[in-house]
Length: 113
Image (cartoon, rainbow, N blue to C red; front, side, top):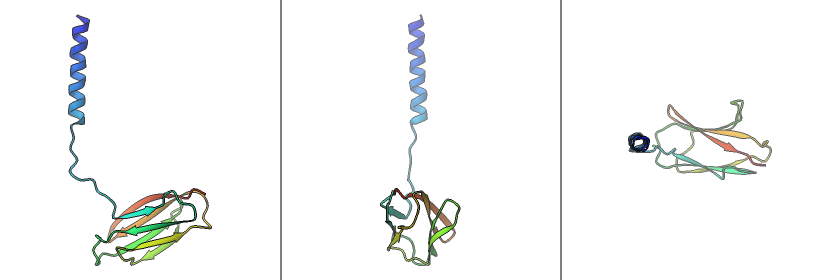
């Protein structure tokens, strides 16, 4: 009797897991920029996708943990790469903030040395 109950219980668990994991994802949003290398040592590059409309207001900031901007580009152009020199920066986690019109996207970046 116990074995039969165990098999029913196992079947129920499998059915519940299948129902819980049977989710479909239509799209996964990908940010319209990339940062490389990350982690970095002396410098890193920010590439802004050209898919951003030219009419959009685009701003890029690199912030420290206190929300203080270290580097600011206003009216940056899509489809370009920006190189940031971080030679004097301390080893820490910084944040790249990309503003497209009213949308703000944030990516953590790490200085390794």
